[in-house]
Image 1 (cartoon, helix red, strand yellow):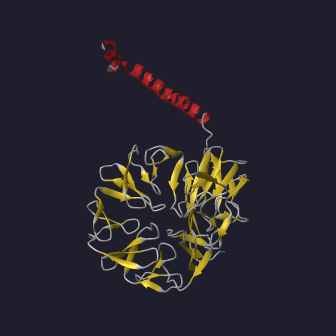
Image 2 (cartoon, helix red, strand yellow):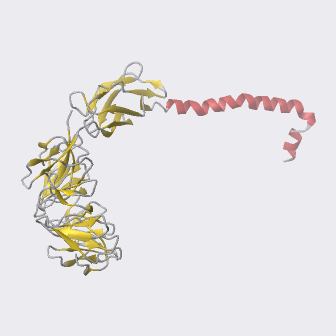
Image 3 (cartoon, one colour):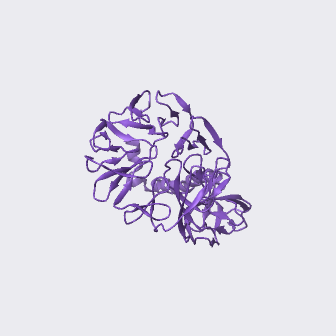
Length: 410
């Protein structure tokens, strides 16, 4: 420490200036040595769209979109870029993907994008050599809305005089904005209906606009329900789940206590989660059975099935029916579609036997039974063949019948 103190003394000023000058010259040398390796290790490709989002008009086109490839901020020439579209948006000719090479300015100009009749939100995604980037697509629907239904043979029938903004009820029924449950000809089945529950065996519960409850049988005849507590949830068939966890019948009598939630019915059977975290199911005679070895946080599948957090569809004993299941669709006639964790699709028949589905477009919605609703509004079967185009949404099945909302196609 003594030597250092003397080095900074006033009479050593010349020596100190010499040292500082040497230090000043050494700083750039150190900085250069630090930056140079970073520059030589760079060269990362980046992609960017010219807009964060693109909006269009239904049945029209979006033009002028391009993606720019750069390396360290410098335009990259000759990069092979693949661009994909989602949710019904296509390039001219109907393809959902296109590939091109960036020019001297680093740009790849996209082909014309066709906007579907249903409009909606989509995504345009670019990728090249490990780099990727996305932008949003959007358009309001300009399509004319109408209604229809499919019978148990999957034959389409048009519905008439259904008011705009009606909700799809069970089977071939529609709930109008003014609280009327109407049939496919628009004739009123009953007024004063606020909401419809899921069907089981063709029966379904309803909540009335005055706060009371009731149900319809398989002949679509209304019956009043009594002693149903306010704020009860509509269960499958003519059942109601009370706020205090009781599953009650149409007279308000308790079928079983300690029920937290009910799953969708299939063949009259439906799974339940109990308030203590355990699971069970009811058969078509509304008799309760306990389920065992069902992992916590499992989802209630159709009938007496459960979808575990790790993607296994299991039965009431916890045995695995099939692995790699991401989600289950609504049952119709005991059949239900599934989306697999690898993005493919399939379905289960009424014997709970799995069958693969082919040619189902990505991002399709699971329809009733073994049907799928594609992003471009086609209802397709398990081979990908089109049952009907211009379908916007499907209602819940009852007796194998289900209502649909149609939209005009471009």
